[in-house]
Image (cartoon, rainbow, N blue to C red; front, side):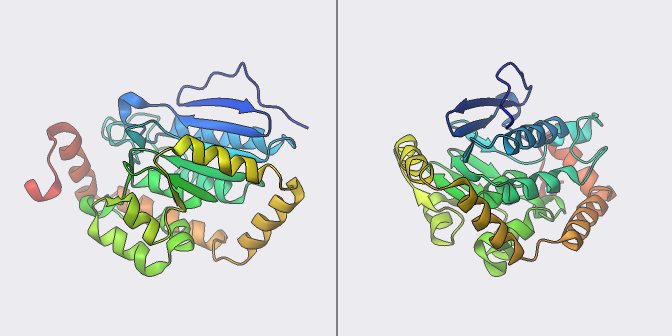
Length: 262
């Protein structure tokens, strides 16, 4: 059957289980909940453990009140740390988004605060997105000469190609209200915990097999195939190896300068 191990301590996430619900909280507050290789690997491990637990129907993915997730950890990239997202397994972030989208549980993204870049991928890959009015959603990659290459397939699936391209081009964050209008957010609630409880109550009534069938059938209708992964990962890797992109990131981390300020 598989169980969530309560004695496992992760360095980047907090995991708790309440009956049929597993709560996963991103927990790198000092780094604005940015994504490094450790976080990706830990999230994949948690998802694999949850997948084996037939009692679990729902996963709640959250950050904190100020930051849900701000994307790739640029500090780790500049300092050539082993935990930099693109170092050993450049495809692991894509694998994480695919795992979220395909796991046979209902994944609810509970969003408060800022969502940016790779963090938007976590939201887009989720089944249900609940946000409060303080949340913002943005794709800033193009400012640095990058593309949200791995995010894009999952974002297009959620909001369509034109709005995904629009978000990529404008590079600034949008409000929860605007995100709701374009389909990025499913429900807006000031009392977000109450809204989350209402969703959990409804979803817990579904049979596990029904959840599996809905997600499996939906996945077969979409374009996210092996070729999509190869295209996305290769594009991101090639851009990250660009000298211009590396200098843009380095100047931002070390001097606080955006590319147009050089």
